[in-house]
Amino acid sequence: MDLTDRQKRILRTVVELYIETAEPVGSKSILERSDLRVSSATVRNEMAELTALGLLEQPHTSAGRIPAPKGYRFYVNDLMEEHRLSLQETERLNQALHLKIREMDRVMDEAGRLISQLTQYPAFALSSGAARVTVKRFDVLLVERQAFIAVVMTSNGHLSNRLFRLPYVMDRQQLQLLASLLNGSFTGLTLEEFTPELIRSASQAMEDGAGLVTMVISFAMEVLEEQRSKLVRTAGLDSILSHPEYRDLDRAQPLMRYLSQEENVGALSVPEGETTRILIGPENVHEALKDSSVVLATYDMGDNTRGVIGVVGPTRMDYATVLARLEYFAKGLSQLFEQNQLPTAGEKEDV
Image (tube, rainbow, N blue to C red):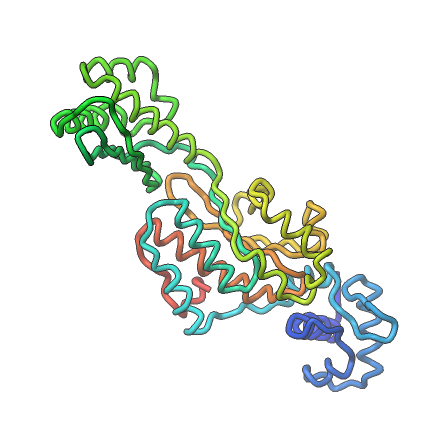
């Protein structure tokens, strides 16, 4: 769509003022905000033309204009300036990223909660299952004479443990043998490679402790199955009520119900080959999101595991700021998983 320079400046001003105030924007406000040297009548004529093009809407006959979904899309694609994070924003994001946590589900919980706090919108974090996840290490720890803890670490950094109670007494030597057998026979294998023949062979090698092998391997197989599934965490659902668009509960409740269902959030994605995505109003497929916008960014969890973080809010969203914070946070998560280091503040590519 071809717009004149003046129309572009007016559209940008309307979008940015509406983001700030949530109030329809009139010609007087546009002239006060911009450096346009034209009359109010000229601005009104241009706004009427932008409305005819479907870029602006007029909610009431005597009111100013608000952006239409088509106008937000034009703004995001052609008018939005890159938001450079301030030193304070960068420090706050880095503090949030100093999470030396290796359990994926805890990382997801923290990521969703922190993103919601940083953006003031409902947020979510999800990860696709690893294409090839294996057991990296087994540990078995004696806690009392008839109980031990099995710890399973997977190749994508996930840790799970389970307490096993036995009807008989066991000793540390048996556990050492069990750990050696498990680490020697089952590490580096996918779930499909845990064959009945391999389990039977390992159980026979354990002799009197054959049942121990079966118990721990069954647990390990559960862990591998979980890690192949998509993990979804949401946070800050009630923050949507702080925005004027959702103070009407009849409007807010369908969106909150939608976001509370993990299968709904898990369906939000970024196309392969892209790292970010913005869906505005009607561009969202689900009816509950038709009046909302979704901003997404991807991060790399290693071992072919891709994560997505995102926020949902009104179409009157500060897209530039939200996108900059999500991109920075996503890059920080990737670097933490890969190298345990944070992105450097102030570099353009990090913002």
